[in-house]
Structures are given as C-alpha cells and as structure tokens.
Amino acid sequence: MKKILSLLLLIGSFTYAQNNFPKNYFSNPLDIKMILSGSFGELRSNHFHSGLDIKTQQREGMPVYAPADGYVSRIKVSHYGYGKALYILHPNGYTTVYGHLRSYAGEIEKHVKETQYAKESFEIELFPDKNFLAVKKGDLIAYTGNTGGSGGPHLHYEIRDASQRPINPLHFGIDIPDSKAPLLMGVFAYTVDEDGHVNQSQNRTKLRLIKQKDGTYKTEGIKAYGKIGFGVTTYDQFDGASNKNGSYRIQTNFNGSEKFEVTFDKFSFSETRYLNRYIDYEYFETNKSRIQKLFREKNNPLSVITYEDDNGYVTVKDSLHSIYTISINDLKGNTTFVTIPIEGAKMDILDPKNNKVTDDYINADHATSITKGKFSIYIPANSLYEDTYLDIRADGDTLIFHEDIVPIHTNITLSADISSYREEDKDKLYLGRLNTKGEPYYTSTSRNGDKLVAKTRTFGKYIIASDTIPPEIEPVNFSEDKWISNENFLKIKIKDDLSGISSYRATINGKFILTEYDYKSDVLVYNFNDNVNLETENNLKLIVIDNVGNSATFETKFFRKHP
Image (tube, rainbow, N blue to C red; front, side):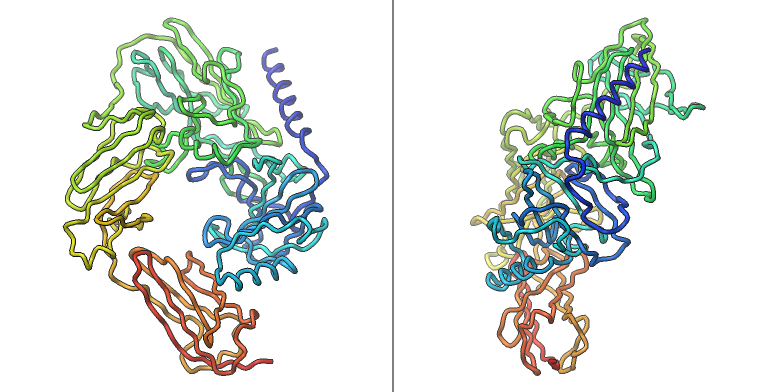
C-alpha cells in the first residue's frame, strides 16, 4: 500500500510540474532530430546547467529558428561563456536563449556587425528596443556554432521565466526519447553526531551495491548510530546518446516516511554556485565524480530542494532496525530504486573524523585577515560554507593557500608585497595559481604601488610570477607578398604561454578590421565578407598585448583580387 501511495504521489508531482507550463507554445529551435548532449540541472563546475545542449551532428552552421513570436531583447558577444548569444523575449513573458552561435542571421547579424565596427570591439552587449528586431515564429535568427566555452559544436538552449530564472525546457513540449532508467554509480553514508558512526566509521563510507533480479538495488546492510545522511553518484542518459546527463528528481524515504526531495524544474542564477555546497566538493576534487548529498547542510539555500524532513537526515537508534530508500527519476518516469537496510547499533568508533588542526581556524560568518610572509589574505564573511581549519603557509614567493578540497563561495583577496623587486621589473609581475605541472596560471591581478592584488575562489598554491616575454604571432593561411584571393578568411595564430592574451587590434591599410579570437585554438579570424579592405595591395598590422602589458606587433603585405 505504501509503495502504491508513493507511486501516486510521484505521478501527481510529475503531472503538476509538466502541466504548469505551456506545451504547444514553443516549437523546436532546430529542424533536426533532437538529441541532447546536456540536460537541464546537470551538475557542472561551480554551477547547474541552465538549459539543454542540443547536438548538431558535430557540425556548425545549422539554422536556428525562432520558436515563437517575440523580439530580440539582448545580444551578447564574448570570447568566453556563451560566446555569441541571443535572447528573445516572448509575449507570454518567457525568454528563450541561444548560446555558442557561429553567427546571427539577417538584420540581427547586420546590427551586430555595425555595432562592433562602430565600437571597434568584438565583445559587445546590446539591449535592442522591442520594436527594433521583432521576430515571428519560424524566422531564421542564427546559425549554430562552437563559440565561447563550448567543448564542441552544439546549441545551448534555455527558457527563462519573467524573473530570468531558467526553467527545464522539457516541460514545454520538447520530446526527447528516453527509455533508460538513471544509472547508479555509488551510494555513500555520512555521520553528523560526535558519537555517531556508520560501520564504526565517522568518515564518508561507500556502501556496496547489490543489483536485484527486478532491476532495483540493495546495499549491504549497515550498522549505524546517531544522525546520518546519504549521498549518491548518478547520471541519466537519453536514447541515441551516451552523454552523462543529470537526473531530474531524487526522493528519499525512511521507514516509509518521505525525508528529502530534490527536483530540477527551475532555479535562479544567484543560487547556482551553491552547487558546491550540495555536492561533496572534496570527493569531486579528489575523484572527479560528484556525490549529491541528500540532506541540506548549513548555508545551503538551494531552491531545487523541494522537500525535507529534519534537513533530510535520519536518526538511527540503538537496537532498532530501519529501511532507507532512494528513488532516482527522469522526466519520462524511468526510475532507479535503492534500498539500504540499517541496523541500529551503538559501537566503538574505529575510524574517527580526521580534522587536521592548524594555526588558522576560520569562522565562516566572520571576516578574517591573515598575513603570511609577503602575503596578506582577506576572507570576507560567508566566503566559506562552514567553520574550517586552513593550512596557510608562505615560502618566499610562494603561498601555500590550503588545498582545493574546500569550496569558496565569494571572492577571497590575496595581496603580495613586491617591494623587494627592482622597480623596472614590478610591472611584469602577477599572481598565478600553480597547475598540476607547477606552471603559474594567470589570476587577474592589479598593482597598487608595491602590492599585487588578486581575487580568487579557488584554494591552491599561488606564486609571484613574472612575464617579460611578448605574445607570439604567426600567420596561418597566408604569407608576405602572396596573393590570397581564394581565401574567405584571414587566420592568424596568437599565443602567450605565461600571463595570457589581454587584447588585440588589427587594421588593413589603416582601417580597423573585426577579428574574432578563439581562445581554444589560439586563432584570430577575419572574414573578408566584411569588405573593410577595398585595395588590391593590402598592409596588415596586428598588435597583441598580454595581461602584464607585453606587446607584440606583426606587419605584412598581401594581395587580393576583388570581384
């Protein structure tokens, strides 16, 4: 009877969620079979995925169509993030968003190019008047691409409400075939009380999974005592794709009573970084796999947690037997079910929590200032989610700033004293975080007299680094004094292995040309269709500046016939 009731509640919640949004208002933005590489709410680095990633058959240039009437309310062109992005506001109050575009279409593209040339800048952000770029359902608005922080050609597609909160687009009638139940990779137990334990351990405990004949799972029985919580590693897959997508809903029960529920219907961008509090951050940084903690810890305000009893924790009493269950669901109703038998047994703790005590104990709700050697650190209140011992040491020009196993929510300020350096060298210094190869990765740094100042949201080793080497510039598809009439694009490779590229500017015959920088390939591209150059003999000049001000200039001459 309890299982039937749970099933009815599940079906009811699915029905409510799916009937709360217009089903036939938006058409598909692409005229191809809809196969996803990324789902809504999927766990990503420092954020939840805010839309659908639609596969484009590993190609760029597929037409994107307006899914409903509306007008272009925002255009943003960036080297990073969404790359070339487009926003359409619709009469029903929803906004659709399109990211990683190769280019815009028609009047939209014309307006973008005119603005970029007027501002002499590739990166722009526009908020057109509602009467300026109106679109009708089915209008061609853009072409798919791989711009910004994209790992391959696809269309990032979002639907946002009137408060600009992203909503799961699958609620709006997009039908993605899905006959697969979510995949379960691991179940973990956590203790809370000082005298609590799971199998005589107070540390994260992985439970052995046993698949049952009916397709459900059961873990090995555990002996536990006190307040405990559970977590899972899981992902979902759609038909026709092998990508590891996020689950839609996870529900837990303890002795037949609901304890916790997380549902990925919508969230706000202001809360998305709290993903680092929701997952086991240390486990992810160590094992590159995300455990979703099925309980709410302090300083976790996530709205995707839609039900909780005692914050999702369960209290196990001595000599009592209990059953804890986890149900992992996708939007098509496919379910993976786990049962955890619990025997209440107060026992000696053989594996106590190992909290490394250091000289620096941080109270999360208080601001803290720390000085170590040449370095000063300012940790604002609530930069950390909980009170924590940090391992902070200075060794000459190197700051050992704990280890990246603790998440940082808001920026921490690092300052370094460079008064001991020669005056002529100070402008070439920056703060860099050492990567796994021991190389400094540039952290955005400003100089204030004899202080270098940077902000970070990542623990690790930081060093006062120097960059005196200018960027490298190399032509890709042309050479000096050659004819390139058959080329549609001018391509130039620019590189800076130390502080990185900050800015660039190119001209032909003294006229600004719009070059698009792909940081993933280190290539600058100019499209000859812009028709800036009207000469047969052309003098190209490119200036590239890195993040500490080193400059490189490249000049050459090429020839081109015109129709």
